[in-house]
Length: 519
Image 1 (cartoon, rainbow, N blue to C red):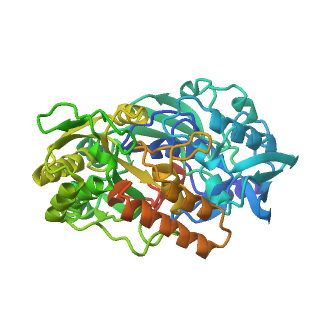
Image 2 (image 1 turned 45 degrees about the vertical axis):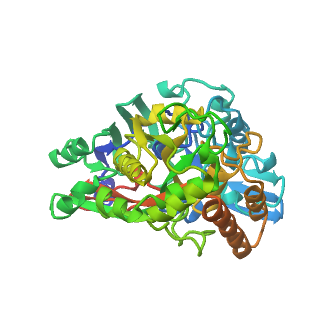
C-alpha cells in the first residue's frame, strides 16, 4: 500500500507527457540525411533525431552536446571528451568511432547542393585515444573548431559505413537525440516519436507531426482552427492581428539570417540570363565589374522593402550579420537608396542602360521571398536595368543554383556557427571543393585578397584580433567589391496556441523539444 501511494505521488509530481504536437512548417524539408544539404529546414529536423558534439542555446552560445567538454592542448590539437552511457536509437552504444566515421563521411557525400565540408576541412587528422575521447589535429591553428563542431550532426559508424543509403525511408535514420524517426513524406510531413531512452530532458510530447504548409494564409488558418498547435514564419501581414488574439502567443527575434543578392561575377562572357538592350543574350558580362554591382545595390530602397514588403518585420542590412555578432564590421551600414549615384557608376563602367537581367528566387523558402524579388526588380527596372523575376520552389531553385544556371539570384544565409566566418567562408570565399570553401558561392565571386584575410583570421587565436580581421575581410568583400548585396535581416516569429510557449531562436530552428506547456 505504501509503495502504491509513493508511486502515485511521484506520478503527480512528474510533468505529464502530452500525446501529440502538430507544427506547421513554412518550407519543405528536402532530406532526412543530416549531411546532404546544409539548409535550415533540414538542419532543424535533424536536430530532433541527431546531435552535435557542441550544442547551442537560443542565442547560439556554445554548450555541451554529445561532448561533455573540449579543450585545446596546443594551437593545432583539440581533445574532445564524449558523454558516456549514450545510446543510439537502435540500442548500440555511442563511442568515439562514431565521431570518426562522421567526420570521414561529410566531405564525401555526393551531389550535395551545400556541403558541410567547410566545417570539417580544417581537420587534418582525427583519432580515438579511448572509447570516449577524440583528439583532433587541425592543419593550422583553428580556434573556431568548437563553433564548427556545433554544425555537424553525428551519425553512427554503422550508418556511415553504408555510404549513401535511403535516409528518406528511415532505414538509415539512427540518432541519439530526443526523438526517433517515424515517417517522412516529401513535401507533406515528418513524424517523430519520443526517444524514451534519451539521456537528457524528457520531451514534453510523445509524438510530433511536422506539416509542410508553405502557404502563409493556410498556415495561420491551421493554427487558429487548432489543426496545428504551433507555426513558424508567422506572415508579416498577420502579426499585428495575432498579437491581439488571446488564443495564441507570439515569439519573435531578429535572426542571424541575411537575405542577399548574388551575382554572376565568375563568367567573363555569356552569363545565361544577361541580355542586351534588345533582350537578346549578351556576350559581355557586366556583373563582373564591381561598379555595376555597387550600382545595383544603390538602386534598391531597403527601407521601403523592410517597412512595406516586410511590414516592419525586417532590419535593413549592410553586411552578413547584425553588429552584435562576433567579427562584424563597425564601418558598414545599409547602402543608401541613391538611383542617381547608381547611374553615375553604370556610366563610368560603360554600361549606361545597355543590359537587362532575370532575378531568380525561391517562392517558398524565405519570408516574402517572391515579393522581395519583385520589389528589387521594380527598383532596378526604374533605375535603367530592365529586370524580370523567375520564382520557383526552393528544391528546384537550390538544385539549379548550385549548377550555376543563374546570373542573378536572391537567397538567404544563417550563420550556423554564430559568428561572421560562416558567411565569409560560404558566400564570398573562392569556391574550392578541396578546402570546402565557397560551398554556397553561387555567383563564384573570387578575390585573392579576401581569401587571404579570411584564412589569416581563421588561424588567429586571439578572439579580439580575429574579430577585427573578419570585419576587415567583410569591409573588402562587401564594402569595396560588393561580392554580394545584403538586403535585410529577417525577424523570425513563431505562433503557438494558448497553453504552450516557445523561446524565439536567432538561428530560426523550430525545435519541438524546446516547446513548453504553460498549464
